[in-house]
Length: 317
Ligand code: ACO
Image (cartoon, rainbow, N blue to C red):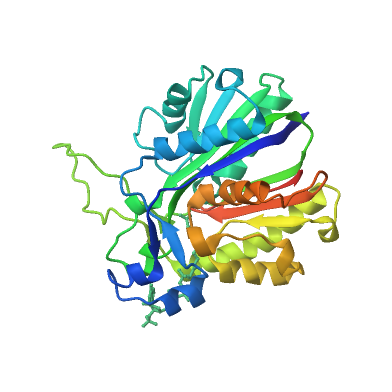
């Protein structure tokens, strides 16, 4: 016994920033960003908090599922950084939507949604939950250096959510971690202790783009092959692949290596950019609401990112 997804939701800030908008801030161009990444615009918060976006996504998912907040047995939020260090984002959402269940945050960077699904599967298999809400919410605009053209153009803000109920639709799942503080990191604010001689750190996201690129392409191919095999299926059985939306070139390279058709690989990076763990649930919700999925479809989710972490799974719709 694990789960089935019975509802999805997503939310993003109102403000859209196009590549041309960013070209007024840093030395870049629509042509560079589009050809290197596939990104055309992204949503950037001008005041919405992560709790605002998370509650909106959660309420849409609950409505889609026909589940009330009081029915929830667990809320998991995946986020690199909530609005507060404590309380967790999950606790704030729990209070604001009127739920009473346990709630906690999980940080696996871009792989957070898949990590959360696997954690939830554990609760279902122990029989301790019947309805679980997962929200992945990220505000990358607070963590990038808006003077650094190599990173600020890549990311966006948003939240995606899914409501899970008892079922057997998780056919396989694989999580990996390969601890690394060189290729991708975001430092903490260090406080002002007079007793510590903290080194001065650039307090923004650092990414070795080419290093992460190689890691991502290798992980995508390896993990998709592994979870499909683990599920007792072949690549021919995949209806749709929902990859992490970091870079269209990574997705295209992975797609070709796996021999999938462009129609099988779903993307929304053009209008969202990289919203870290919120990418996959946002894509899932958009496609769900467009009526893309049919009962029995085989969906493969595949994520990679900071940690370095990866997470992939096979779901029956
Ligand atoms: N506009 C114009 N020029 C730029 C920009 C920009 N926005 N950014 C970088 N450049 C320049 C560089 O300065 C460099 O110039 P130079 O040749 O004169 O030195 C040139 O473009 C090439 O830069 P590269 O970094 O080599 O560009 P690359 O083709 O590797 O693309 C990118 C960079 C898009 C970041 C790519 O490496 C990538 O997608 N990496 C993977 C990112 C990823 O997967 N992240 C996932 C995890 S994110 C997370 O977990 C939070």
